[in-house]
Length: 549
Image (cartoon, rainbow, N blue to C red; front, top):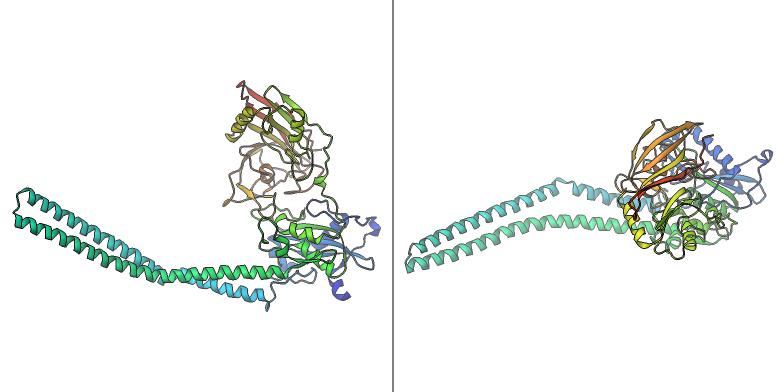
C-alpha cells in the first residue's frame, strides 16, 4: 500500500523557505493559493512541460489541481489531478486515479456506450439513406400530382357547370334540363371516386414512409432511455467520501439542487478526485488549488498558469459534502467588511440621488447578511417609495449608482436605462498592453450554466453585448482604459477585456477572468442622463484613484 501511495504523493521540501503549514483548508470557491500550493503547481507545470507526447492535447487547454496533504507520520507532499481525461486515459502514473474509471475497456460504461453508439450509427445511416430520401421525394411528388389532378378536375367541373347554366339561360327543354342534372351528379360522383382513389395512393405512400420514420423515432427513444439509464448507473458509481468517512453518491448529492440531477461530467473535476484519493489513503488535506494549463477555450476565459475557484454547477454540491469534517477557511466574500461604511452621496435633489459605491459592497442584499447600498438608502430615506436603486454594480466594482426617491422617478429612469439613454463611462486598469488606441468590442454573452456567476461568449446562445473603449495610458505592462458600454450584460466589461476575441487583457484583480489582486480595478466613473423632472442633462463624475505605478 505504501508503495502505491508513494507513487502518487510528491513530497515537498519547504522548511528552508520558512513556509508554515496552513491552519485551515482552502475555501475552494474564493481563495488565494497557499505558498505550498503554488510550489506544487509549479512542479506539476514543469512535469507537464516535460511530457512532449502530450504537447498537442495540453496546448488545447485543461484544468489541473493540486492538493497539499500530510501523511499519518507527518510528512507533507502533494497530490495532482486533471479534470476529465488526459491523452485518452484516466490513469497516469503522476496523477491520482479517477473516483470511477469510466474508460475501463470491460466496464459497463464502455460496453453500453458502444451499444448506444451503434444505435447512433443506425439512426444516422437511416436518416441519410437513399431509401428514406426516395420515399420522401416520392410522397411529395405523389401529393403534388394528386393536387394538380384534382385541381384540373375541379376546373373541368366548373367549366361544365358554366356551360349548363348558359344552356338553361338560352331556354333548354325539360328533357335537356334533366340530362344536365344527371350530368352534374355524374361529374360530382366521378370527382369523389377520383379524389378517393388518389388520396388512397397518397395514404399508401405516407404509410410506408411513416413506418420507416416511426422506426427511427423508436431508435431515438431507445437511445434516450439507454443514455439516461447509463448516466444514472454511472452517477451511482461515484461514491464520494468526506473527512468523517461518510459516503454519498452523486444522485444523493444533487437530488436537492435546482436541476435535480448531476450535469454530464460531474465527479471528474480535479478537486473531487484529489479529496477522494486522500480520504481513501488516510491523508490529511491541508490546502488546494486548481489552475489552467494551455490555450484558453473558445467560449470561456482561462489563462495559462492562473488559479481558478472550483466550479459551482458540477462541484459545489459535491464539495459541500466532501469538506465535512475539515476545518475550512471562511468564505471571504461573506465577511461584512462594510458594516460601518456609509457610501458617499455625490449628487442629490428632490427626486433622485447618485451614490459612490465602494468596492466590496453589495448593491442589493444577497444570500449573506452583508451591508448593501440598498439597505443604506432605505435606512437614510425611510419616506422614499419604490426600490430606489435604478441599476446595479458587481460587488467588486466601485462607482456611481443612480437611485430614485419615488416610484414615478424610478420608472422613468429605468425606462431611460432600457432605452439606452443613460450614458456610462467606466475606468479600469488592465493587465497587459492594449495595442489599439480605441475601438468597439462586440461579443455576445450568456451565463455559464455549470459555473455561475461566470459568463461566456456564445454566438449561438448569447445576447448582444457591445462595448466602446479608449486607451488613456500605457505603463508597466498595464493599460488604463475608459469603457463605454452600449449594452448592459452581466460581467460585460470583465469578459470583453479578458476574452481573447476582445482585448485579451483581463481587468487587474478580476479573479473570475484574470488574476486576483487587492481589489478589482473597475470603477463606474460617470453617468449622464436627462433629468426626469427638469429635462436638463445631468452629468455626474467621480473619478477613481487608479495609478499604473
